Length: 227
Image (tube, rainbow, N blue to C red; front, side):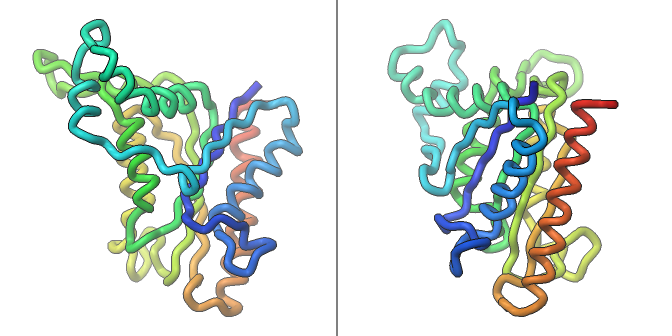
């Protein structure tokens, strides 16, 4: 059986498939999960709405606690890391993670950045040793075989690799960098563009993105359930 972790981070609460001002990323993640459930009804799905309930931002107490050895932590340190532990436990339990991450001002929403800051944690998802030969950091999730799917949306167009304003896109690159750091290297994605135009180009982009979602479900299902 496969465990799927479904993350949404859009500030928009609705789904653009049935609400005029709904979220395109929620539309894509919902479609991904629905197709996955239809193909694999016995799989487990964990859902977390980062947009509705953003994780706490990292604080000085969080940093102090994270860099204190677990056996030396005081009660307040465990409390400071409680939410981070929950988020990491969900991530570790998942085989496939599908995340809806719209572009806000060329980067990820603050609520998704808070998620990244909580899951990239010393001793849980990456190791650190000053005396280690070579790089003092190493990933801890690199042997877990996880796949990560980034489903995004953009107001303008041309943010894809090699396109006219790809250099302004800090969504997929920043997420992929963080994921690779902790050992998740199998990363896929699809994105809707032309949201600010709201014309036929947006509709065509939605159709194309939904088609990519279907292909990704098929691809990842095949990888995990080879013939």
